[in-house]
Length: 371
Image: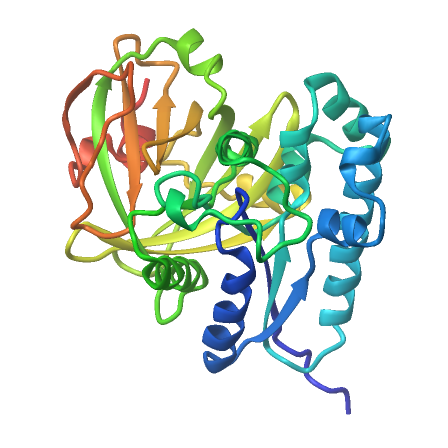
């Protein structure tokens, strides 16, 4: 008699951030919090610090593109080893926590050097970025908590506060475009910052249930060139379709997202609840799975195509959606930590009005009524 296949969930997240942001302490908080929630927690250590401590720091290299290629190669190899070993364990819920991810290295390269690394790895920026399930960025203490910026807790750290701020900005820009990027700044004291991180990871994992708080705004058609030239803004091409659901009020969508022919695929189930929040469960698909489901799309809904500009600014993450059929307006969503957070609009965006909760500005409505 054959054993029933094990039901196992492996989630891979990145903890990133500028120098002296609290990453080391965060790992201990994550270990304690999610072990108690029934997860087996695995940690992939920071590759750049590992090399520096081994006598091979970035500052000594004379060939940065080759150095960054090797760092990224080692980082990805370590992640693959941890993921492969995780599959051999009996645990049902496994959380792999990467102390920095592959896109962190982009912040330390020129555009030409980054293209070289992608070519050597035979991959794309989209694939490199989105093979992680979520990314959590802790803002450096040098940005808003300057009195706590120190080199004392990391012998490999060398940046001045000004350099730390530039590095922090570059890292946020590198990860902007990921579907689940959260930026946790220094509006809190340190313990509250760690608690905010645990809340964000818990919400993503669905512990106890995955809640999102978003505000949606109708905006004037934005200046695309202004968005495209912003360092902390990334354009993502999205195509999505809808499937039928047997659960009243549930929406099931499949989505292709990426840029310039490099795509990743998702299936998402959503249900709205009171208070402007919604339950959202998401799973990754292969290209073949996506194409098979696309053939089963609900014929009452048109396929949606849009350009999404993901913008990190004011400690918030904005999604600006531009639909080809709209010539004078667009939509902007803001992801908040809670319904009590203050909303700040990005520079250069002109808001017409808030449309949170208005059906005619939801994607399913647009899919049913677009021409």
